[in-house]
Image (cartoon, rainbow, N blue to C red):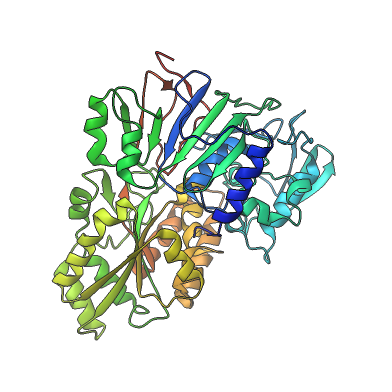
Length: 523
């Protein structure tokens, strides 16, 4: 899920080497001027920085400022525009098209961006041996990418695909001369992109520092000469950074709903956005009785989602009545909404022949999960299921899962919308390739095969109406099986000082995007 790799020691060395090469001294504030900005991100910067591998909220947000895709998109709507491409390809409705690179594009080390870099990137992205995270988003539609000349590449498709321009946004082009045979450097924090900002210092679990890349000539030039992003996982110190009459930071994300009123009283703008962020349950389908869909359904029906929204999310969320957030236009209702029904939950357990069930629920320790997990326990206890909570750091939990930990049920948060909005991507992120279902839940058999067949059928359908009908079958199957399924979708909050910054929006996935920011009223 998060592609965790030990970063602390290597990145600490990386930080020191940058400083030795003339990087700025380590501090956690830049001051508030039109030339610099301090931001707060509520996730660790100590996970992988490999652009083709990471799902780390901090890394992904930073990568949007430091790397480029051939096609970029609006951070909210994903409306495409030319990134490293000179212009959008004229016609992507068939099975071949060409992309020409932007003239004069350079890497942060001054080397030119070439077609070889594009081919190098997509070759790795498609390699089944590498099996990087983004490969999930390219199969089954993309066959390969070939060099035409130094500035042009040709895409060959297995089939026409309706989301080509959106899906190209997920692939950040990487420099061959830097990372060929040296992807460990990217994993541990080395950043050499072609985007408007370059990373000049990394301090794991503390901050990442950026500077404007003067040779950038693309459509979103750097707004600030310097950026400092603080990594603050705990809610209280994160909120404190953006609080008061003279806040230390000008923008902060992952704002708890309980703090919104206080921040507004301090003069901050606070916005919440619907998106793909969800708290889900994942069942180990190789560990009885969780291989039985009736047991999985029962445990879902036992949970009061509305209470979870009220108590845990302070009203800033919606129940998981479909696999895709019902607040989003891409969603459709599922036949089984898995709504709170304790009597039905008990009956399903009886049908499954299960009595005196004991469950160990493994959870991550983020604020959002901690605020909601007791509602899960209350619901399960109420139907006679003995529940033990096993709470630990996110990295620690997924390291255990990576090592083959025989878990029973996991509750944590995830958000496919970091990568895109379309229904195919929203499902494949979890259920295909290196997603959590094949990797950890280990779901297999006829129903799993039917799901993948339906996904492929929808992806190959060029008629939008027919594609929606097939997608509805996908959503019904996901609710029926409930291997990984959302309990609630959370609104994500962002706060900023309007005197210091404007042109920013809350987004429905973790992180911030400052590529269109502007100085505020007093900057």
